[in-house]
Length: 168
Image 1 (cartoon, rainbow, N blue to C red):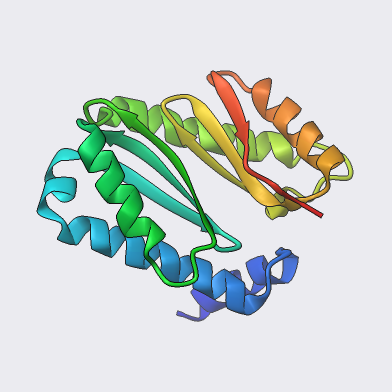
Image 2 (cartoon, rainbow, N blue to C red):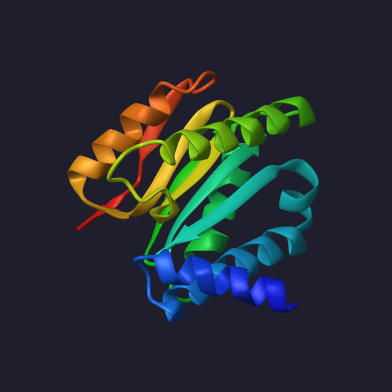
């Protein structure tokens, strides 16, 4: 328990978001996932991930129908304190465990790459990968965002890089 608290404190110390916003982002993610799980159609037929950064939410994954995609986005959009929702849900069968594992590896490789860039604080960039697409979130300068996106695009396995930054 103490270790988790110390780790959270360290992340918040390096983050552009206030402590309250950091906690609110975690709450948004939990509320969204709980709401999706409580919807039998979404829970049984989809693979969805929700990431919140500075109350801006990214929804990724797959749904078999447009109707289920709209339902998921409506649910997430109605969560209190959500400022904007990026809908990156694909109309497709849920991805395989192999694809999800590859995405986890891709995210780790991109994060590792970001730590090698001079004058960039990699702890200020949230990286999410879905089906080989790398999504980048954070509050940084436009120049830093361009540098980060360029580095991410050079990582093996990254098919596309999408910048969802808020620029200072």
